Amino acid sequence: MAKIVFKSTDEYISAQPEPIQVLLQDVRKAIRKAVPSAEETISYNIPTYKLHKQPVIYFAGWKKHYSLYPATGPLIAEFKEALARYKISRGTIQFSFTEPVPSKLIEGIAKFRLKEVTAGQSRKTSAPDG
Image 1 (cartoon, rainbow, N blue to C red):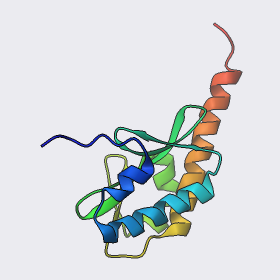
Image 2 (image 1 turned 180 degrees about the horizontal axis):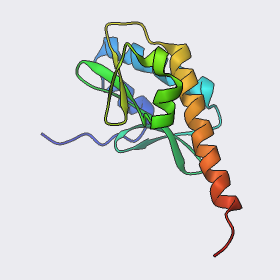
Image 3 (image 1 turned 120 degrees about the horizontal axis):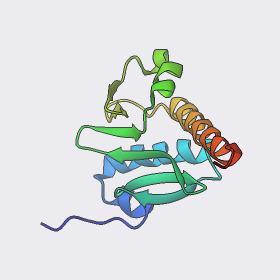
């Protein structure tokens, strides 16, 4: 069976089972609300939000959960209490399809990632030439 290569977030979400589509749309809305200036694209065949060509946050739907990426060390430390109930594995945060989408938490995570990315950009642009 040929692997589907997605060209847009709409295409990605519409390829998911119908009940999952609603949840993924809620995830998408929370991210768009938090980082409205980010470009919505597909990278690694999953929805990706980039600012100045740098990835801010990704999400993906799987068989039993959906995930946000990347879950950096500082991000996990910042949201330690709020993330205590979720599985964190290899830089991902996993959310169950059986629970409501934690929109405010996702917005906070996306905003935090935006700060990480923009801080990284400012360090690159202010670094002395060597």
